[in-house]
Image (cartoon, rainbow, N blue to C red):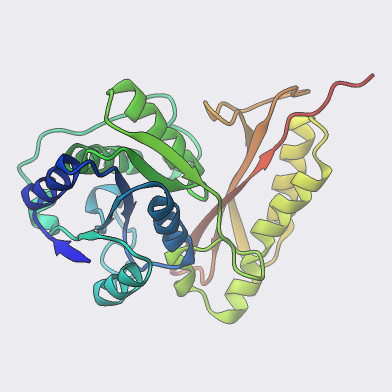
Length: 288
């Protein structure tokens, strides 16, 4: 595995491989890699000849008071894990170079970014969309791989790739969970054992909603919000039942598929950890 730190060097490496007939897979990450990230690398390896993994803690997607400075970083460990999983190129640009203060362009995806995570983290998705657009422009992948754990982000990226006619297919990969059911996240490292145990209220509530799903969006939303608001040790930010493509809130009886999404704060009040999760709700067969 080779490591590149400059966009122009990554572009040259990709175009050289493509000239030989290679297909290119891109896995964008912020590092502190866990089994969820590595599952994306494995998917890319199974589909593509050249796998590029970016490790970049994107300052543009962090708001004031968020954890940019303390976000977990382990580039040497990430490099070892990526080599073990067969990645071919690690792209690890410097923030000052890849996100220069003189930059005047921001990518905004309207509609999908104003609620859920967007309501709690203004500007977050502009930062995500801007850097993903830049990564895709540099790597020119045939396929780019994203996990369903960050489901709203996945929808935003699908929209921007379609709207801007960016190269490559957006490939969604399943959520990877620990044995206790908590969705893997780099931020899980912030939780103590007791805090983690209380955070399990999030996947449990989503699992209960999925098990009871009968197509009634309002009942499912009430069930999800009630379970999270009653849980000890977590604070519910949002609990929503939404269209799986537009993320518009759903109401009443729903014939087609839906998505249950939720976010909570866990841990000490002075420095809580934000956790998000979601679950697919299938189409319900019509009675009779």
